[in-house]
Length: 390
Image (cartoon, rainbow, N blue to C red; front, side):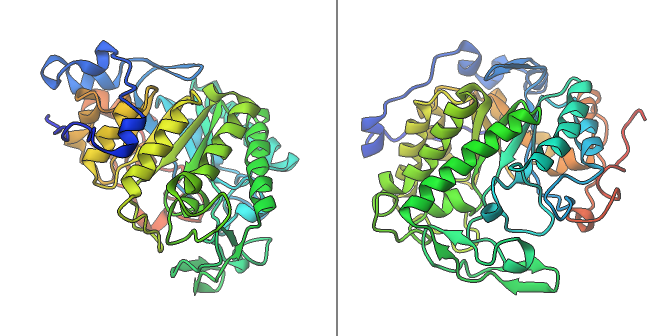
């Protein structure tokens, strides 16, 4: 199995002149593909933050829309995640840190006592199987509709509609124009993230992942198409990156950097997000600044800019998780073999195969994911996928 490596980092970039290569020279990351077996690498243990994980596979966060209307995880959530506990790290579905953070119907929250109690059942079930679980903190920002939430109008960096439709109880509707957060409200939102992180730890989670990807609030701050602010959170790339950095710092201060990860998707084309020609430099700056915090990991959802991905590897001195949407089975382990990634994350394959790790080890066939049952419903397409050994 061969996975090409992109060209070396562009050292002429102004950001790269400010932030030199920070890679640590770990011999395990410097060996060539010819000197490592990509498949066996998957099953080597690795330390992520304060945790020793048994393998280098990660369950990527996936919205399932099966929570109760009050934001507590649904009755089958504990079974769903515990079934997949053999994977090195579970990252849960996006979970709102506040009322304002909700965008979709029946997504879970982690900011009330009820949420904490309900999530504890899930974390205990995962730990009973020897697994590790991080709750992903997702603020939807302008990707929200009042019919789906407890609030009446979404919030965002600027009052700019995403130009997208959303599922609501009455069918597809346009996502309305959000309300721009005041500077003071931005600070409150940072505090909301920190409170949610503390709640996640209280609920028994091993840590949290900050959702900075997929056109939600943090990426809305990053993108000039969604952020036209004139205060310290808008304008220059340094200002547009400020909110993400403040959230990461606040959460690190609240629960420890070694229990905090962040997910980014540079260049994602979703829902009106356009990061423009300086987008790569924005991410080089952001990654270098986040690197100073000593986070447990950085989780990158690849959007096809291989040169930027390699730049990020050089700028990031810690654990890097790489997700490549649509990666075929034949290429599993490729980013570990080249030294680009320390772990790889998978979504649909893990959704459909609760024993994903065992199937890889045995070279056994995979169940096929049922797209019709991704969102909403009960056990069908959720907890009823068969394992090799029941």
